[in-house]
Image 1 (cartoon, rainbow, N blue to C red):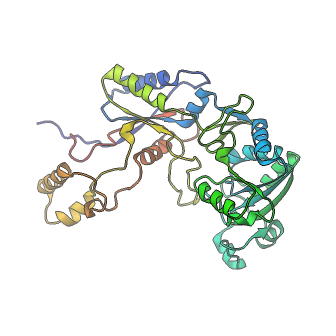
Image 2: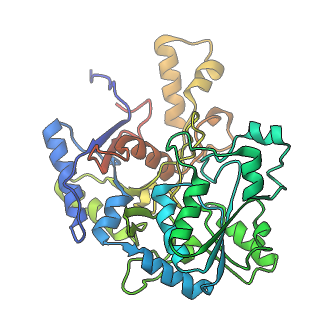
Image 3: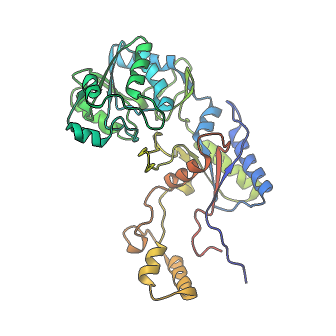
Length: 399
């Protein structure tokens, strides 16, 4: 009798060479996975997932731009006068260098910060402090003086940075005048500026709609800055500056451009080398929230900008806990195992709405797998920009 399999999903970080602009990334990824399999003594299987972090894809593409490129695009599209910059996230890596470029392209920046926290959960002031001060963040607009008088200086708990002062200093260091207000209604910026750059990520379409309806002269999002090359720079046609990261003190590395050909190339190379049909995806930030710091990780516009067709859709799974506690609560041992296995074998169609699937995670496969990969690879010095996920599509009946 065949021995029962004892391991389900496995996620492995795959070490790769340091990727540089112009490298054949598909060849490097495929070769690294194959060498890892040989070295560690495992085999590739159909429907394994090879995931590549967006950072090395953008680096291989050479998708960079300077603060000067950002400034020129902002100046050309927003007029070079007073610009309202609203709802940025609080990040030295993600937004500070973009703000430098924006400030270089304007005479004055009116910075409107959402409060008590930014879009991804970085806190400016606690809800408890708002309650104590009698401030309603849904309606109240605060000037910088009011904010300081009520709440003083608030340092970020992880970085130790006062982002209000930090962002103001960046703006003035670029030669622009700086003014800061605090509000959560988009139209609160209109008494201060009518050329608006909205910097929110996942709510940007609504913010633009509300501002245009309220009579703003010009409304753009970060997705519309560097959505085409400036002086031969990199760009991202769909997301612009969204998803960019600081590369050095003068450059940003943009979110990777069209990379569907890359995932198909890697898939083809693995099929040719092993006969196995794997799935391939590019991943950035995972979609999860830290319960301690209350920071939502997803500062990229999407978890995965490109993936092979086998990763389209959502999980279609039964909840084993529900079956064990409800349908088969009177069974145990081998009888329980066989009953649950038979239910899995007989599942058909889409299980949405069925009680036996209640509590399974109703998210896109790429969001779930991308989050797993982001946690596996980390963002530090692990040196594993490629992740191999095996057994993700298996269930209790697979041997």
